[in-house]
Image 1 (spheres, rainbow, N blue to C red):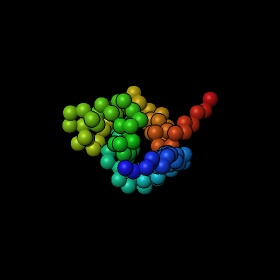
Image 2: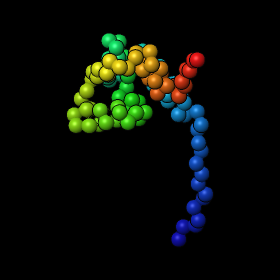
Image 3: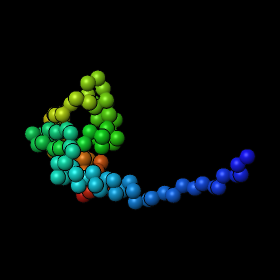
Image 4: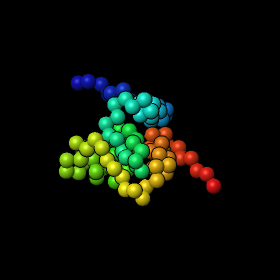
Length: 101
């Protein structure tokens, strides 16, 4: 009969999630492995579906809905301002939101 198992523990790497976001943002800036183009007010913005899906219920339903995984270009409604959406996209990749008065 085997003796008692040694106690186990979990080591949390607190920087891991921020490092992942930093690397994904760098990939986005260099347009590496981006798999969707968002057209916002005529401006094309490249992104990763996985990041959009993880951060937004709207994108979750678009990309995980029927045939949505095949979407490579998505035009957002004209009521969405490019500057405002760019700020949201940056937030998804950085966890930082620039606010100004």
